[in-house]
Image 1 (tube, rainbow, N blue to C red):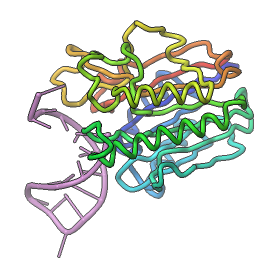
Image 2: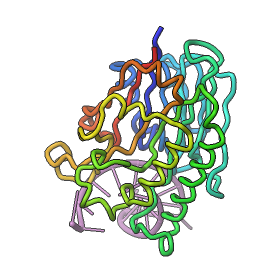
Image 3: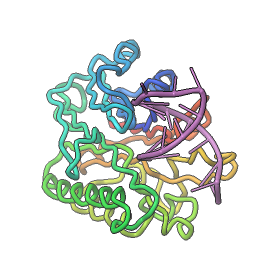
Image 4: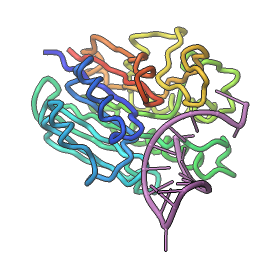
Length: 267
DNA sequence: ATGTCTCGACGTTCGAGA
């Protein structure tokens, strides 16, 4: 039986639990990874998630900011959250499956820091924090590069290639597409021998985005998007990938998140 | 390109973060 896995920056899970239900209704992910849940664990809408059919739920939240959650139809053998870049932010959740087609596989659900507006670590501590986070991800990737059974998903807040942004030239000095970030992401991919499942399905130079700013008057008409949301895997898992779908229409749903879900099927 | 959306706070509006 194939397994469907989705990742989505929901931008407040309490506000958009109805959109989560819509995604589940239309795309039926067996595993759903959310970022920017924006609530402490004791106010997470757990009963609604259970009603959607997810018996196994791992949450790692904090009040008001960040927060990640992983829902599953398959039981977990273990859940863990590591500390990154000298902060206790809720930005990482690792879940290892005990059963089902992904038994033994670990899904790492990440929300990488956005990095603020100014792409200079000397004057912008948020950008410095993002670069430290990416650097730690590269070292961590190198330490696990020889192991199989790995999936890494989430809002990594970097659009690595020219075809991942609406205008490479106009975004070269915009946080999310600066050379120090895109080169850092490429180092991370190489260090961990990660395979970018989304780009294996939709190769460059075809444009592909997963985020459009709320500030655009008409996101669809201007289509000034960026591909910030990623699904990576170790080679053994990547070999089983059969389908990838970026749910672009979700950006047009009522009161949408500014990110759309990315759904992969693993046979 | 200063535009929109979310949260939390001695809230009836603002600042911070994205």
